[in-house]
Amino acid sequence: LESGSGTSGSTGALAAGDQVTCTFTNVRRPEVKVVKMFDPATDPGTVDFLIDGDPYDNGGGGYGHGQGTDFILFDVDDVVGFSEVSNTADLLLYTSEWACDDGELGTGTSGSTAALSAGDQVTCTFTNTLIPVEVETETAFALGDPYESCFIDDFSRWGWTNGQIGTGTYV
Figure 1 (cartoon, rainbow, N blue to C red):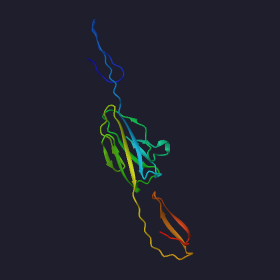
Figure 2 (cartoon, rainbow, N blue to C red):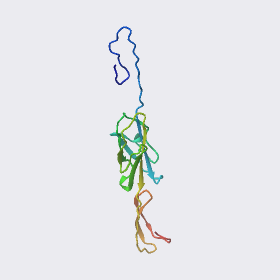
Figure 3 (cartoon, one colour):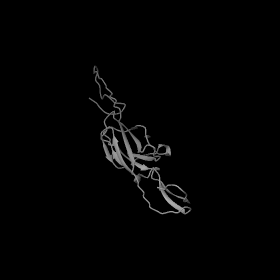
Figure 4 (cartoon, rainbow, N blue to C red):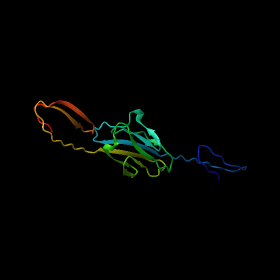
């Protein structure tokens, strides 16, 4: 009795009158896909992924909200490691968690699947939630005073504005 793996085999030595049945069993290789989500969904940030040590950067543009890799083939019993690396998103401004539909989950910017079985199709999703920033200032201004102020928008980008105080409410 001969056995093996691959796409060819041999029967060994046969004698006159021997009857041999050869059976090839195909096993579907497992696949893994990694997806990116941002909260809020309008966040313009992008990230790149490292999957089992190989870089994935979506053709150079990174992966934004709702984008992900195609399914990637692996071998049975592989445990696939993955991580996200910054493209345009400053990952220090977010909480990060990940979950795979094989039940694995965690926090942070890296994780791994469980050992893969034949035919598995596992999707792992990173979710980055923007950490809220609160800024309070108390400054007395007079009409016509020049000002320079700092602002932070919804995506934690900051900058300076210059101008002159006019009538109105300043928060």
